Image (cartoon, rainbow, N blue to C red):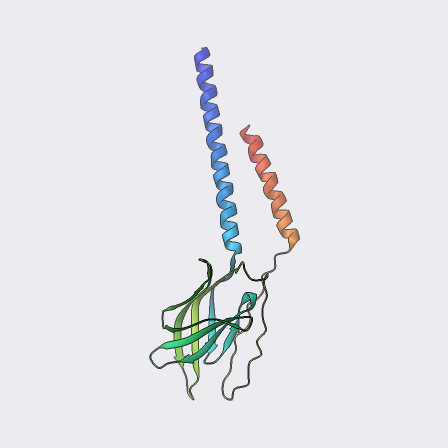
Length: 188
């Protein structure tokens, strides 16, 4: 009879260890996915720029369509706080990607080029992703004053800033801690 009690205790202890390991892995996955999601500033956004137009991104980056060619390509330029960063010619369905210290900061696919009358050209980007640049100051959106060009309109808007109130983060953190205590208490 003593052997059965001992075996029962070992099995119960083994099951409890599995539950604890599962809980720890769940918490790790939850926190790692949350931190990766918080690095995203633009998440698959569509952008539309006219030939010669610029779009102000987060942290002082600006993407500009310098010119568009008849072969289905566009010359793109990326600047950061009025400093040249990257210039590249991208074909339709091609990607404009800016990496900094083995980390992607900007990735945009040139989706299509639409030609209109009087040399009006519209370039669409989809999807467009921007990630936090750890070397740059916290989120900073730069205002671009479009130059008046006769017969050319630029209706691009700045991305909306995603502010999460600190009280919401604190409340979520408290509920998370209470949940963890509840689970640990149930396991023991």
